[in-house]
Length: 68
Image (tube, rainbow, N blue to C red; front, side, top):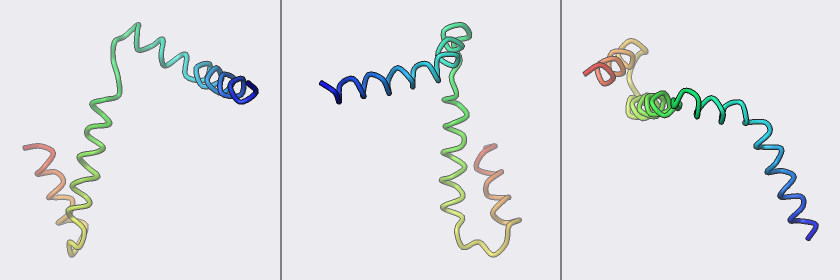
């Protein structure tokens, strides 16, 4: 019973902390999904670019993959 109360307390604190963001979603109907997808794609490209000789070559690959 005590662990259930602790879990409930942590859940309540989490909801209280994120309540403004939750409310903004219902007001604006926007999420950060597009930005998170872009960040994930950038991380994947950077991982595939490991071992490039210089930053400029990696930058060109990143720009080519993002804007094609």
